[in-house]
Image (cartoon, rainbow, N blue to C red):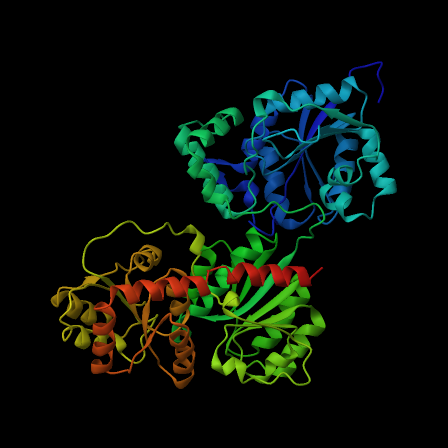
Length: 584
């Protein structure tokens, strides 16, 4: 660094629209302003900063960022999408920087005074990078000042290192002896327990919105010290994005592709459980997720509402379409949860394009060509032969999948009324079990309070609702978040499926009705484990099973405790972690 003049300090904000975990995040609104606006607005307040710029990619999707910068008179430097280091080198040259302050485009609570503190220390020591002293608390992330000479060295000596190419300053953290390190004490206003304050996933954006709402601050004016003080007063806010993990420096990003059924005749069970895996892959393993959907637009809407891309497959040539997606998107893994016409040869072809390729609850011979397979310990699974297969098989209640994020459901409140019965028969109720349940309930003398869920694809749904209301029972409103109804039930009467796993994870004993011999065999495993009762699929059978369980509160409690002990709702996280580790 030339010490005969004041070093020129330039903030370079790295931003792109192609974030894998939250696409387009830098231009998503927060407190009615784009995320990138917040970052620029706050960085510009730093007294040490001479100029602010944005570094993005040359990809067409990032034209929107260039347009935003042009509108706000901010220099925008564009370079290769896959090489952030080169983008910074281009930006440093274009802006004639002596000191570069790397700022991530999702650091919406970046603190200008903290930037000044770090830059002042770096210049005073004529250093290359600033490290907070080991063991010191620092509630900040997303800001890294470093010298131009260190950047030049990186482009020569570490140009091919993934940490340097993707994270730039991440290389310094992995190699603290690289260049002249400056070690500084914690910055007193921020020397508290760190909080998750950057925007990587939808939950992070929801957290930031909640903070602004609670503080009543204008856009860009929620200071970081104010945010930290708020979290001391209202620690429950941390729960909003507690499930999101920061991607590690050495953790490679990318996407996962999920090929699944959903909507119409398929129902929504596969969608719900795959969404749970998708959230775990995104929030905990740092992967973006794209769905290839064998199904209908209503199911695709659920996927998009959850923050993921959904591509509806054509009725014909689905395997070819998925193969083309794999060739173009280059996913790091493929998860197959479909009952469509996919063969063993198709799965073998998929594994030639990417590994791992996983299947869920698949009893067909195509599972033999997969690299990973996941099952609850059901009778059908125990009978499967894996002769000649190299597949890694995971079977046990710990791998059981639910369609709910159990961690986000609060513990049930005390309740002294009659047992609360939840009746839900899936999305379409093809066997008309709901009307059977109505007949059975009229014959039960024990007191209870019943709530019915009418799925989106029920036949004669309006007529059925009128029948239920005429008998004095409650209806869960269409579109209502089912988590509350599920979590507050004391016993459930359900068509066996994904809901059985969800009730177990919530500690709700259930009476199962089976639409097929396969479902009956699965439900028998739940009954044998003490989680519920498999009832005969007629009014008398339902009546008898319900009367018995309503009359035995101690038994209900024991069944609920057993169920929750076996199925803890963490199966999706385990599968996501298992698959992510297999990509390394």
